[in-house]
Length: 185
Image (tube, rainbow, N blue to C red; front, side, top):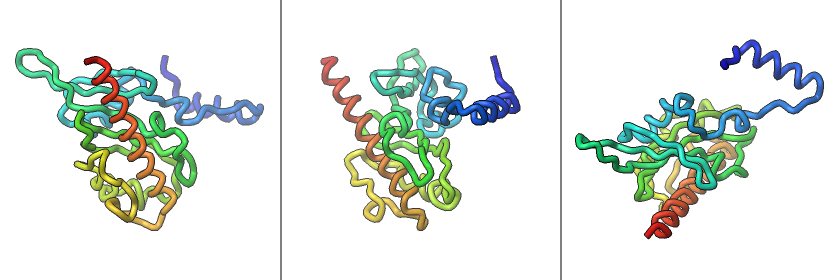
């Protein structure tokens, strides 16, 4: 069942008027098996993957696979949201939803800014130069503004929060994947 934008806005206005809490972006848009919602972003952060699977091992994430001519699948990476792995890291105006792509070796393949409500995001984290800095970075790199990541703008709270969320999320995903691999052996 699809709800029109007009109906959704009307429902939110009614909830606000009667004092009921409205759902936040995170409550409405968590990582799920609904691939159509994030297909474009997943393909952007994991360009070598041709199929995706949703996995929830405590924190929801996607696994991207490449299928060869014989039908064998190879894991090429993980796609995961910063808000699922570092939920307490917030920007100046709230949550910053960044989808991170990471290969199984812990190298970031790409990031995609999916959602934010930052007042100066358009000249800080939305810029291609901000996103491009993370390609090829390892989870072992410092990933710190002013060290190996440029601030790109003077929106320091937004920049620092976004970088911290990316760093903390990527390291947590790497720890979970490594723990999973070694417990399976």
